[in-house]
Image (tube, rainbow, N blue to C red; front, top):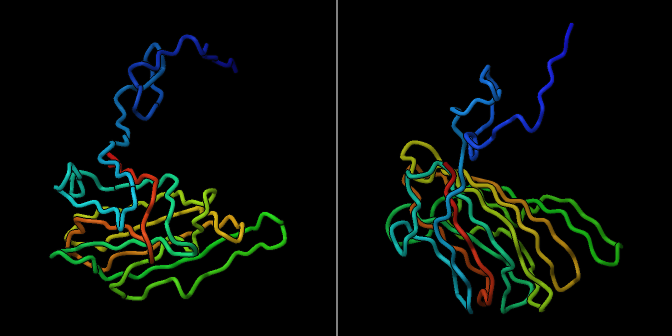
Length: 218
C-alpha cells in the first residue's frame, strides 16, 4: 500500500490561526471552519499596599457575567506586608456582602531548600463545609524580599441561575522557612444566584505588590 506524505511547507495555516486545526480533502489538507477558544483580556489590578483586590461586574470595565462560561484569574508575584499569612478569596452572590456559601477541599505539596523535608497532605483546617467565610487559597506566605505568591484560579459559569459555581485554583508560594509550597484548592459556591464579584485579600496585613489579571474564555 502506498503512503501519502505531506510536505510541511505546502501547508497554509493562515486560515486556521486561532482556531482548532483539522484535516480535510482541500488542497492544503486543513479544515479552516472549525471553531476554537480564545483567552480575552478583561482587567488587570496592581497591588500597592492594598487591603484587597476586588473584581466587580460592571465596575471599572470588569466583565463577570454570562459573556463567558469560564473566567481565569492569573496572579503574578504577589508580595505581602505580614509574614506567615494566608491568601484568601470570597464571592458575592447578591447584595453587597462577600459571603457565598462554599464547600471546598485543600491539599498541598511542599519541599524545603535544604532537601530535608517533603510533604503531600490534605489540610483539614483549610477546607470549608457549607461555610460563608473566606476560603484560604495559599497558606503561611513569607514577606521577605525573595518571597511571594503566583498562581491561577478558574471560575466556571458564575452567572448561572441553575447550577452551583465551581472553581479550581493552584498556587505556589515561598515562605519564611525556605519552603516551596504548592497549594491546590477546589470547590463550589453552593448557590443558584449569580456570582457577580470576587474579592482577594490576606488574612492579615496588605498586598504590597504584584498583579491579578482577569481573562474570559470563549
